[in-house]
Image 1 (spheres, rainbow, N blue to C red):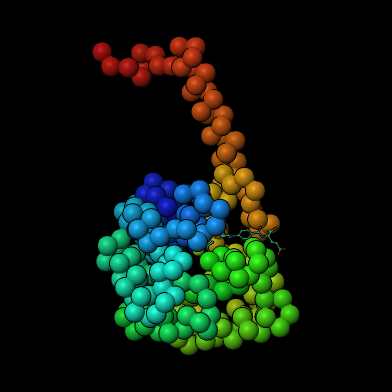
Image 2: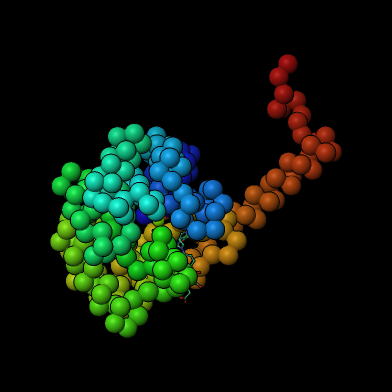
Length: 244
Ligand SMILES: Nc1nc(=O)c2c([nH]1)NC[C@@H]1CN(c3ccc(C(=O)N[C@@H](CCC(=O)O)C(=O)O)cc3)CN21
Ligand SMILES: CC(C)C(=O)C(=O)O
Ligand SMILES: [Mg+2]
């Protein structure tokens, strides 16, 4: 799974055979420039989700439900998820949390909405967690395991495990029949997810779990400087890029 927030990026990943595209609430940070995921709203994410759906044809498009759009009640969760499915064309939704969101998961699943769960470092709770820290060390690992089992029982079709020790992710993966999708959770999960700007090298200070597969920031810097230089010197445009 890879994140996507626009049609052209979604098309590249879809055609490369990435099976699941996540329109993450990480858009708050990588698209909108906030310093956490908390400020982003349903109205901010809806057009990005619609663009990713239009840009892809094979991938499952998962819409991340933003902070405050599902926690109040199962009814609120259903209203929000229905908007992402009806107005943006999402195929599934993702929400953060364990036991405290089980009623929401059950309501969505009952309504025919596939639900991806998210445990471990749940960034919408960064203020309660005290920062972006590894979760599930020691006894809280057993709580995470029981949350994962409860989410599976409630009908979630998969679960993201973010920033947890590899050994815990391996135990959870072995204990569930639904797939686990890791980010900073080691090699034993069934799948992996990264934010695309992280794996492409656009993010200034990526987390330890990020592997940089490209240096997009450097390549873009080089290209835009060439454009500016050629405009300044008159080397661009020539007849080749002009109409007569
Ligand atoms: N660009 C981007 N990539 C992401 O993966 C991502 C976002 N944004 N925004 C939403 C959340 C926030 N995420 C984060 C942000 C920071 C760390 C981080 O700095 N982690 C520490 C771990 C410290 C410890 O050992 O406990 C690190 O140094 O990697 C982790 C996940 C993951 N998500
Ligand atoms: C990093 C993934 C799992 C996410 O929730 C997001 O991009 O918002
Ligand atoms: Mg998210």
